[in-house]
Length: 100
Image 1 (spheres, helix red, strand yellow):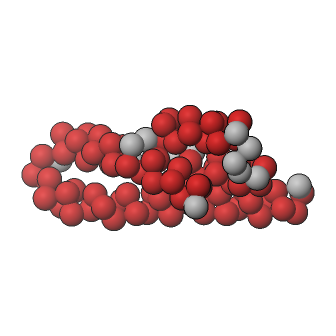
Image 2 (tube, rainbow, N blue to C red):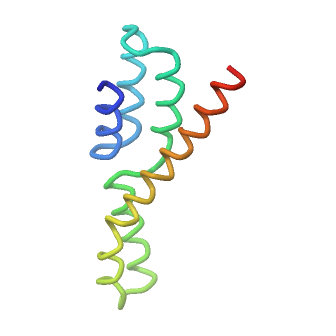
C-alpha cells in the first residue's frame, strides 16, 4: 500500500518527490529492504505528467502540423513509460532474489 502511494506521487508530481518520500519511509522502517530495492527501480524513470508534457511540447515544435496526433498519443506514451519502469523493477527484483 505504501509503495503504491510512492508510485502515485511519481506519476502525479515527479520522481524527486517520490524519492524523498521513499527516503523518509526507509528511515522510519516502514518498508522492507526488498521493497526499498524494487521501489528504487520503479521510481527511477521520467514517466509522469510533466515529462510527457515537456516531450509533447518539444515534438510539437518540431512538427507543428501534427499537434493533434501528438496529443492523442500523450496518455499512451505515459502508460508505456510507466510499464517500462515497472518492467525494469521486475527484472531488478528477479535478479535481486536470485543473487540476493
